Image (cartoon, rainbow, N blue to C red):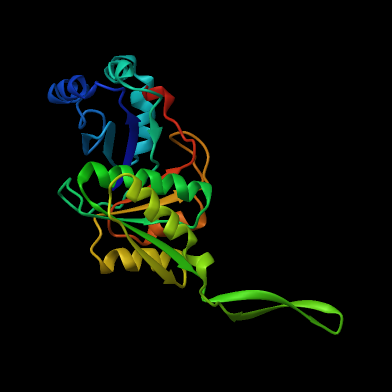
Length: 250
């Protein structure tokens, strides 16, 4: 099962009009479009369209090319402040409820991770959920050791320091600016395995990670960590790609 989430920001004062569109129901029949389900979350100036089923990205491409169905998305255009972003997400989905209480958000201080942090904070604020930021530090460092005039790699135990906590401190501060009390955990080991294992240990409702992938709906290349998280996770995963947009659905 796969899920794709499309995120958009509402213009000021547009929430009532957005609720009317939602109350009117989806602009197309999800089953007829080859999807298992289509739902919408609304709140705090943010609207998220969720599409669930098999081969969702291809289904969305087909919808965007169908003038009759694509017109249904066009009514949202006047309510948005910018083109929708893809919170690019292939989900492994086991849950039945749409409520979220704990969101694990991975960060390493990189620009893609920062976008994941910002998206995770928005989702946590919308659902009154607790954001839990995690950073995975390595267990060893590789150093170049010179022997007989030649450099050779050598592994030494990694000593945790303030640099390892810097991205967590930044994320917690960003959450505090939104009025959210966040938790931060510094983990060690293989990044993807540690993220998935920790999310399981706290029974998280969602995992949010960043990716250095490019492209629109189809053909995106996910980073190795985000790809591994998607393969290993048994709970919902959102992969946020920097500057990715779904202009066809605007």
